[in-house]
Image (tube, rainbow, N blue to C red):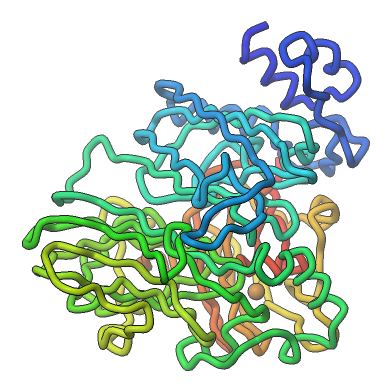
Length: 506
Ligand SMILES: [Cu+2]
């Protein structure tokens, strides 16, 4: 059997009927289990009448319009085991025993064909954060696919249409707060930026195997009195309130502790591109490179008109690309955990000298932090200026009685999303008004689309920080049919109800 026909079976989620056929190519593994729903497709998911199905003709047509190019094959094994964080070995879950997992790199227009092998003691999925992909490859359990059972595998196949810095992670439970994350870099065949080298910098907050597990942390929050009396460490002026809800004993840069930092090397005078990714679960990072200013070139993968800044704020899920002209010496790359205690740390070395200590806090951290309002999209990715066809208000609510969060006062699990789809229509310009009624900031992420922040002239992003008592409007063109999750990228908020889904009407 070809992999294509096996994939079709996996997509269809034929639990019983597929088992024999799957067995023929993979004798050790059971078929994926269908956990939910009795509807026709996909895999028994119950898609309400009147909405586009994740495997529907509209989704296939949108994918065909991306003109799928060369297929690039990847295989990723999610596994439980020991990982070295740089002098400290932890029991955790990772992709292939590495943190971050093995990066994937393709060119825009190519097709990612990635087989996820689930050797975890739990069901899982893969979500491709920021990619405008075909809906049935989006990895939202119970919405776009059944979860991938322990011992099973699932092949994701999608065209990556836009160049940029993306990443992937599970969309199941609090798994993101383990070691399950890695970069997905999409090269631009017409890259116009010029630089001598590039470094990918992945930031993370860490507790797994050091202070219990993310599941235990989530259970503790949910059995507690509510937000504000949890594990939060302090307030952030930048965020307008508490930094987070959970105490993470460590912060990692490219999977390493500050005491054993990643060291990036280059020649003095060279220009490097940094691709910064916040893979944390509950931590915003304030990032600066000692002795340098940075020139912002991309927000969440999409180009902006270059702007200089001293520091950047990255909420969970956000990415920035910056250019830096390197001086001679050895410099600290510090990612301060906003409103918390500690920082992720790395070194940039272009010459001799003693390396700065992990506790160093470069002055640039207290310099200018570029705001969304200062960023303009490159002309090539600017939305057409017109009135929205539909304005949808999404109030960010919760955190007052018990540890429960939601949109418009309604906490939802992934299993409940299909019952509460927010309808939109293909071709519309949709405005989402994200109204933060909570005493806590939230990084809100929309799947499958890259919106403009503030107005059609705003920078293109897929994740936006909505600070305390702030309202942020985002606008996007509804050009990718299917069912798409909208959620807080604080994994503890998302798993405590702050999850919703938009559905394209037929
Ligand atoms: Cu949140």
